[in-house]
Every structure is written in C-alpha cells, then in structure tokens.
Amino acid sequence: MEIIKKLLLQLLLTIISIILISGLPELIINKDVSAYGDKIAVVFNEVLKMNEMIYFNQGKERLFLDDIWSPYFYSLTILFGALFIAFCAAQLLTWGTLMLPMYLRKIIKNVLTFLESLPDLLVFALVQMGIVLIYKKTGILVSNVAALGGDSRIYLVPIACLMILPFVYFYKMMILMTEEEMGKPYVETSLAKGMRRIYVLIVHVTRNTSEGIFHFSKSVLWFMISNLLLVEIIFNIHGITHYMYHDFRPEMLAACLILLVIPFFLIFAVFEWFIRRFTNRGELV
Image (cartoon, rainbow, N blue to C red; front, side, top):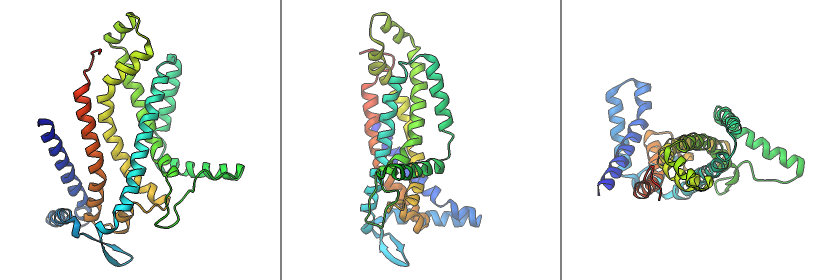
C-alpha cells in the first residue's frame, strides 16, 4: 500500500510539473505572473476535461480525443520500440564487453564518449543518408525515409534514429556501473569459489546494477520524448507530436505530454515494484 501511495504521488507531481512547464511561454513572453497563473488555470481545466478539448486542424475545430488515438499508439510504438531495443542491445553488449581485456574496454568507452557528444540532428541525417546511399549502391530500399500522408506508416527509420543515442547512453552507463560492481568483495568471493565469470556477471552483477540502470532510464526516456518531436517532423510522421506543433497552445502541449508519460509511468511502476521485490543488493541467491 505504501508503494502505491508513493507512485500515485509521483504521477500527480509529474502531471502538475507538466502543466506548470506548459504555461512557461506565457510567463516568458508577457513577463506577467498573474497572466501565467491564469494560463495554468486554463490548462488545468482543459486537462481535467480532455474529452471536451478541441484542437485546430487547418483552421477547423475538431475534438482532440476523436482523432488522437491512432497517431498516439503509432508514436508509442516508435518510442517504446526504440527504448526496448536500445536497452536490450546495450545490455547484451555490456555482458560481452566485460569479458574483454581492460585496454579494449577503455577504447570502447572512449568511442562511446565521442558518440554521445554527437548532435541529434546529425545522427538523424546520417541515418537518412545511409539509407539513400545503400539504395544507390545496391538498389535495395531498406526503408522509406519519410511517411507519405497521414495514413502512411514507417517504423524502421524513426525507431533506428530514436534509439541510437539512448543506446550509447545505456551502453556506457552499464559498462561503468558493472565495472564498479565487479570490484566488490562478493564478486571476488564467488569467483574464488569457482563460479564462472560470465555466470556471476549475468546473474548477480546485472541484478545488483538493475536499480541504478532503472533510475537512469527515466532520464533517458525524457530525452527520447524530446527527440520524438524532431523525428516526427523530419520524417513527416503523423504522430502525437503533430498536434503539439500544429496547435502550439499550452493546453495541447500538456495533454500530449501527459498521454505520453502515463503508459511509461505505469511500466516503470511495475518494474520498480519488481526490482524492490526481487533484488537484494550484494547478496547471492
């Protein structure tokens, strides 16, 4: 019951934070605190009555919830697919990397440090250029580089673009945390008892670093949500961010962000319960 109360409080604070942030343009433009408060009240009221919220499409008013669900689940598929692939690929490569000599690990970490400094737009452009180059050289179109119309769907390219930098962040953080964990006494003791290094790494060290990686993944998710807007604009994707940049009102921004955050919040809540229930740091089971 205590953890449920904590999670509900976190969800409430997250929604309040989104509403407060969505009204910041009013404060920045007008430099009027009372106008900012009035705008926050309007946004809060619109969010509470989301079933009545309207948006403007080519000058016409339409009910927000009547049109949002297909683009919403399309965006969730891209976002969740990119997060899942980035995390799983980083974890698998981390296990392999920790079996390498120290000098090779240093080279890999230096490469990751360089990659994480690359601008998002440069990464997206390189992916597009790579697909075009493959097509010119081989005649094989790996994927369309843009969606054609509102009903068109592309998945491979936007997921690939959205997962590259999160993969780099996860990979580097997992290596650093796993190396730190591998130096702890219980690891040395288990290796001295004859346990295989790969077994200790996968079963025990991974379990004991899972809590830190879990909390790190929350910041990665916010980074991905911010990049989702760029991805959907660049690739002409009719997703949920389409409503954010075509009707850039604070209430629309707040509604879209809340819809994006809630499913991931629920997923993270389940994982947090699982980690607390089944993870005992520093103990072997």
